[in-house]
Structure formats: C-alpha cells, structure tokens
Amino acid sequence: MEKLAPPFDLIKKAVNIFVKKENLLFLVKIYIPMAVFSVISIAQSFLPDSIKNSNSVWLVLGLGLIQVLYLLISIFIAASGIIALGKVVDGGELSLTKTYKKAWGFYWVFLLLSVVLTLLYLLGFILLIVPALLFIVWFAFSRFMAVEKGLGVKESLLKSKDLVKGIYWKILGRLIVFGAFTVVVQMILSVVPYGVGAVVSSLCGGLYMLPLYLLYRELSA
Image (cartoon, rainbow, N blue to C red):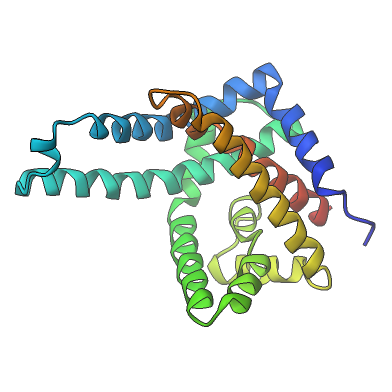
C-alpha cells in the first residue's frame, strides 16, 4: 500500500470540498432535519421552569417521542450524508430527493449496523479502553461499506477490519486528529450566541464526516 495522506492534508481537502458553493448548499440541505431538532432542543431550554419541572405524563411522552424520532431520523441522515459525500467527491448529481430515496433503501441495514456498533463500543469500554479503541479503529469504515458497497452488517464489519489490517496505528492517529478537528469547529461555533452556533454545527455534519470518508476512499482505491 502506498503511503497514506497526512491527516491535515485530508482535512484541508475536506474543507475545500465542503466550502465549494454547490457542495455546501447540497450538504447543508441534507442535514436540515438535524438543524430542526437543534432548534427544538434550544426552544426547550427557554420553556418556563413550571413546564420543564412538570411531571405531566403528556410532557414526558412528548419529550420521549422527540428523542426516539431524533435517533431514527439521525440514522437516516447519516446514511444520506454518506451518499451525499460520494456525490460531491465524485462530481455526481447533487439531488436531495434522489439522495434521500437511495438512503431509504439502506435504512434498516444501516440502523441495525448502528445498533451493533453502539453495543460493541459499549462492550469495549466496559472491558477497558484498549478493546474499545480496537473496535473503533477496526469498524471505522463499516458504515461506508454498508452504504457504498451494499453489504450486510457482518460483511461491513469484517470488510472494515480488513481495510485497516497492518495500519492500525496510522488509522488511530488519523481518527484522533479528525476528532480533534470536529471538536475545535464545534467549540468555535458554540461561541455564537442564542443557539445559532449549535444550529449551524448541526448543518456541518458533512464537514465532520468528510476527512474520514476521504481516508476510506484512499484505502479502498
């Protein structure tokens, strides 16, 4: 395998792709549902204490329903985001409708994979930090495998693990840098008052995912 691109080069490339006008508008539209939930969350913080501290069954059910919807829709948007990244990287048709339609075809596999990954990561942390890091690196590209390759849960996990074989530390280092990049951007946006920064951050999901996606493309080439 040829030498991997440095993480900061991948981040720079990701930013250049993201800020391109047509790509930016397309990716922002993909993540609008997440911004809606951010607005709802911000609105909840402005509710009177009498309502927030209420033990009303309807309030509890309503908030619970919002959380369930958030989880289910966030899975769909994550799958849509991967498809969208493929389009902006390859110069495909930037159609919101077609992207969402294609993502729906992967939804249930993607949902099951996300549940499995969450359980594996939890198990890894329960067993101590080392197993957790192993799982995070091994399965870092499994979601891309499920969407771009159309693989099932088991196949996506195994293919992702194969992809990082022999380069574990290089991948781990890049994941740390990518994570730090996301945290820095989110911290900068958090300074913007009245919850505007949080809403903008929720629209930047494509930017946060792009460096890892570019690394995946490099490894898959």
